[in-house]
Length: 113
Ligand SMILES: [Zn+2]
Image 1 (cartoon, rainbow, N blue to C red):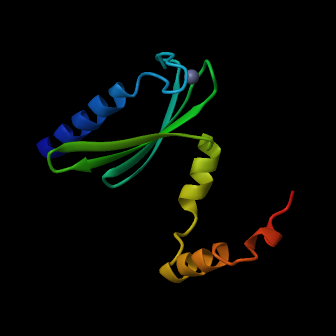
Image 2 (cartoon, rainbow, N blue to C red):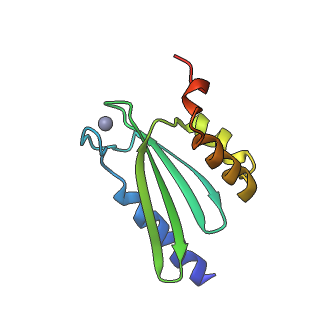
């Protein structure tokens, strides 16, 4: 129980560090929409800036000695994140097929204007 409380505290501390928009530098403040999806020790945190409407996504991993966080500016809104999080992961074979398709010499004929 104590160990779990420590992890929760570390996660809360990490979340408190996500306080400024990387696009316009506005402080998110308490009114920012910080929404998260959690699965065991992995948390996806999504924030939409109230000033510039840019979206920021952070992946927070709880590890043995605290947390590890990777963040990025994204065009995904929270609804997109929820939808994409639920779909099945692609298989290795699907990734290979996709790579082969993208490397075709005539790939550009499949692009539309
Ligand atoms: Zn902003």
